[in-house]
Image (cartoon, rainbow, N blue to C red; front, side, top):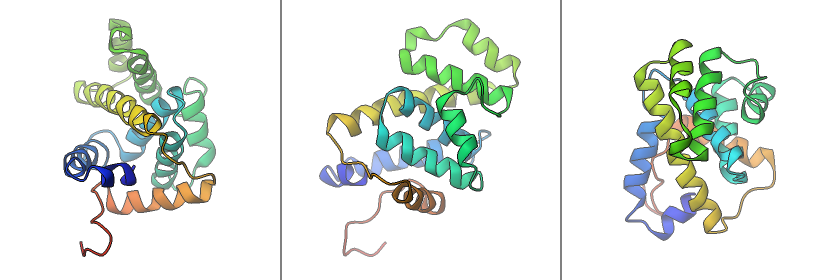
Length: 173
């Protein structure tokens, strides 16, 4: 992703700030929950790079719980997660199908499980954003690392630094 933004550096500050605010800034959804939403949508879109990188970030936020993350990404209805998160992941899955696929029942379910209007809003925005990011990454045939260790390293870096774009090589931050 950083390489794509380096190709169009004039876009990087806006996308980096947007993503950092959405995924890393303080919010009533935890950073792990937001990363699970991103990984789930990326899984549904079959975007290997985004699924694996955001799953790795979620694992870091959850103290290494790889099985929990894998379960939530693959099948949230069976995963050992809260009913609220299960409902938000289902809502994100509807957004992935298309905005018109979201029904009143999807939002009602999330509310009945304790999701606030802000959390519902942010879930929809994260899901929509990751549909775009998935298409951006896959549409430009981006290279994806082949080992989980590479994704773990990216996960640690993102947990520590957020989503701000890195300065160009040779330039001090």
